[in-house]
Length: 247
Image (cartoon, rainbow, N blue to C red; front, side, top):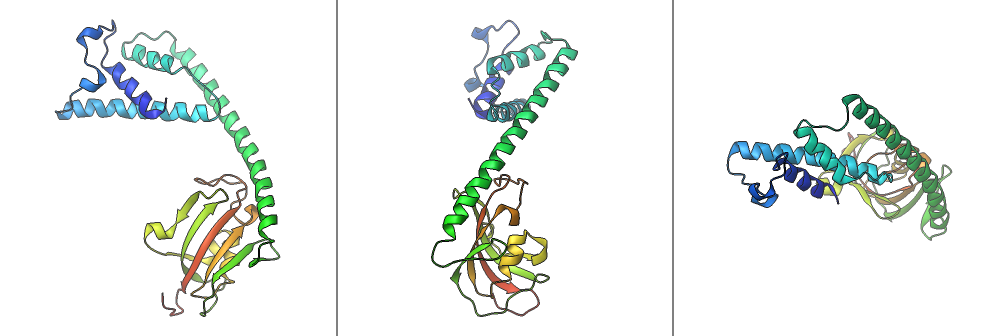
């Protein structure tokens, strides 16, 4: 049962009295949202339900399976002022839960990081054998898709590029194409695989880069990029700022 389901259950709970006289209470489907006050009440319930659902999903992601019906019961008891645990007990058990979640998340990250290293090494070893793939001294791999005829940037230059970034499983994690405008940035302010790779390009070129984790984000994670991920980028070098190159 995901966050939408937990939200619905919480909202249903909001419509119940302490004695649960169901015959006199509207169901979630019968709730009217005609007035601003009704919409505010419903919106508050949705917000609470979404928060609880996100917390439970996060815990289940590290194999901590809490009884969702007891979560709902605790919510109802709190509304009715009839908690079966003292406040200090609640604080103690929730502090322990947070610590357990953090511990399991850290273990999962470490396991994923080790797996990503092995997956990346295996991929790069095979990829290096493909015709058209060049491997630099640092371990960066690239493939020329289109060769331009303009100037090549230096590390201190600001470049204008279009790009798409993918994980090895094909997951797209970033794309200037989808944002509808090129990216502009100093070449020495990005990951080292980009700094090295884009200097190999001429304006008008399109390259495909295969970037080992140590030349990308290393042990850091960001968004869909997990620790020690090998990354794949297609990059078009559109121009070098101040060089007068046409897009």
